[in-house]
Length: 302
View 1 (cartoon, rainbow, N blue to C red):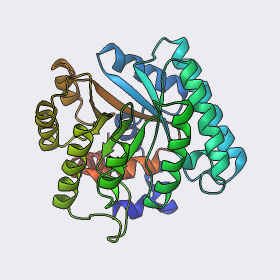
View 2 (tube, one colour):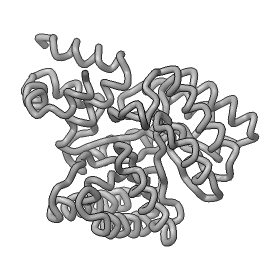
View 3 (cartoon, rainbow, N blue to C red):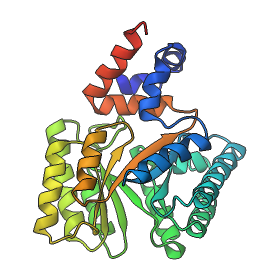
View 4 (spheres, rainbow, N blue to C red):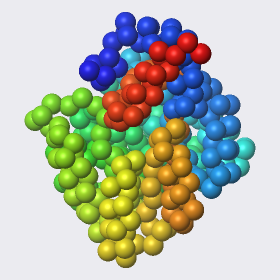
């Protein structure tokens, strides 16, 4: 139901107009502007955490909008470099924001420029996963980008039935792979739907990545999966600098600090930008606790 609401313009207008919404958004989104992203990044890095920044925006429909998205990332990277926040801070990019839906070459060209600017800034880029219809194109662009920028990261969504095979392909030396559960409404034919099957698929992909020679980036807030990751790291004899945990900004911050204090790299996924609605709705769909928090805020008079 929440994922359906994420695609509704009418619900978006109603939610955006609700006075308590701003307080809820601030918990999960750094703000609308580059300055907001820098402020949050500075605070997180100062506290011992790493960061990946995502400027919210997807489903770009014109070349002009795709170029504008590219330029926003260039500005962000220059600002991160000037503020000396790299390499602790990297960026995450959705190819759909760069024009993937209407011009694959354009999306690649924009992504290549962003990767070049990231390299100049002393950091790197991860290509965010989107719905299953984009996976083949994204992996193709990833492969091409890695010719010039081998540290470009990939994202696999464990609930997709294809992800185990993709994990085997990507678990190679120097390959950075973020593994998450998945946050898009997908048909049963391409994705697991039950929580149990998704968790099992996550662990299977985790084992593949941990047993390979790449650099796994395990994106989960699930205490069981965190514990399994720690166990698998010991089983496969991986030191704390040979993988990392990733968690969303505003979700389980105490756990983020606990893992960092234990010596693990913990990277916080920090979104920013005015197009926060679809992102927020997917986050609510992932965790019932997030939904309860949001509904309490919307019903509050304060």
